[in-house]
Structure formats: C-alpha cells, structure tokens
Length: 169
Image (cartoon, rainbow, N blue to C red; front, side, top):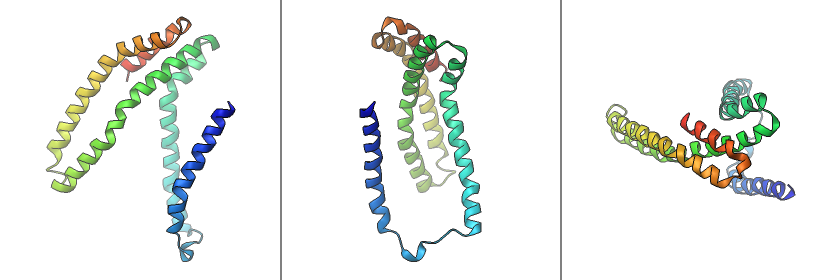
C-alpha cells in the first residue's frame, strides 16, 4: 500500500508542478484582493450546483455497488465489485470519442451556424447510436468471456454481473 500512496502523492506533485508555474506568471499584484460580495455570491451560486452535479455523478456511477453492498454478504459483494468495476471501465471507454465529436460539431456550428449544422449533428447522433449499440451487443459476451478468463473460478459471478451491467448501459 505504501507504493500506491507514494504514486498518488507523486501524481499530485507532478500535476501541481505542471499547472502552478504557468499560472503564477499570469498573476498581477494589483489583481490580488478579496472577492466582492456580489462576486462571492455569484461564485457560490454556481459552485454549489457543480458540487451537487459531481455528487450525483458519483452516486450514479456507484449505485450498483451501493445497492449490492447493502443487499449482499461480504463474500458475495467482492465478485460483484470486480464485475461492476470491469463493466464501468468498458462503459466509459466509448466516452473517449466524445471530445473529438464535440470539437467537430463545434467547428461546424462555428463555420455554418447552428441551423445549417443541424444535418451534421443528426448524422453524428445516428452514427453514435449505431456504434454504441454495436459496442453493447459485442461487449456483453466479450465481457463475460474476458472476466471469466481473467478472474479465478471463485469469482465466476463477476462475469455475469459485468455482462448484465454492460447490457444495461
């Protein structure tokens, strides 16, 4: 566990060293001050919504594990956790394609305008639905086979859990 802790600390240090020096160069001594009451109210008016959204997102991603942890025994929740985590990783993989799709759509809206970019958005949405349907159709049996090959026989339930959660994605 100490190796994991050192790795996590190193990640934080590297992230800080990559972010802080460029940001410090942009600071201006005249701009360093407390926020006005109106700016503070506006900031917290937005920030609480972001916090609630983050909490909702976390609960949504972990709801399967939370319910299973409450209903299953400790011995049964281990395989469920493994299957749930594997399914979540498989479900999240296609989301890596969203940033380029959003960039392409944003470029089209900027180039043509929102109304004229609508056919491109419709085409992208249809393509996305077809790809995601294929991803789930192929991913469900592939997940079952992969988890069965990856984990020992005592975790056989993990393959079923992962497959069900992929199919429900």
